[in-house]
Amino acid sequence: MMRILFVCLGNICRSPTAQGVFEHLVAQAGLSEQIDVDSAGTSACHVGEPPDRRAIEAASRRGYRLSHIRSRHVEAADFECFDLILAMDKANLQALLSCCPVSFQDKVRLFLDYEGSVQDEVPDPYYGGKGGFEAVLDLIEDASLALLSSLKPTLEGAA
Ligand code: 4NP
Image (cartoon, rainbow, N blue to C red; front, side, top):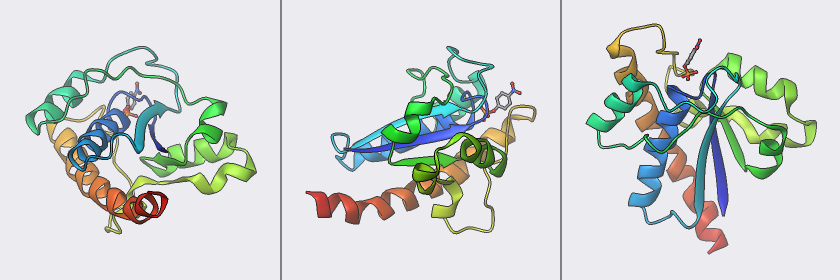
């Protein structure tokens, strides 16, 4: 089992969206038994809450379900338990690295590194309009496809 954790600040907008999109792709590829997907926040401000209503609605319009997700705080055990810990932006990457044991730091990366696009961060849509959530989905869909392709050789090697 390969375990992937998506991380943003509040775990109510970007990282639950990434979780929902990636879970959808993993299921479509028939890999749900091989890849476990979760998300968490570097802030504990929204712990226990469902994703932001705007994130749920934008994702739902593209066929992704986020309603099962509840915000949780990143915890020390995550660095050991997950194989990849993917931050939505540089501030959250730094927040993760600042509390990650040195031996696990190579698990922690920027999610958009997989896409190789001009943009390297998924911008925070929380204080903006609806367009921000569409832009987040566009970036997350592209990076999720790239991430899944990058994992396939490892999964095939393990099978
Ligand atoms: P997220 O968005 O990190 O993508 O979940 C945010 C959610 C809440 C806040 C900021 C960003 N906040 O300041 O409460």
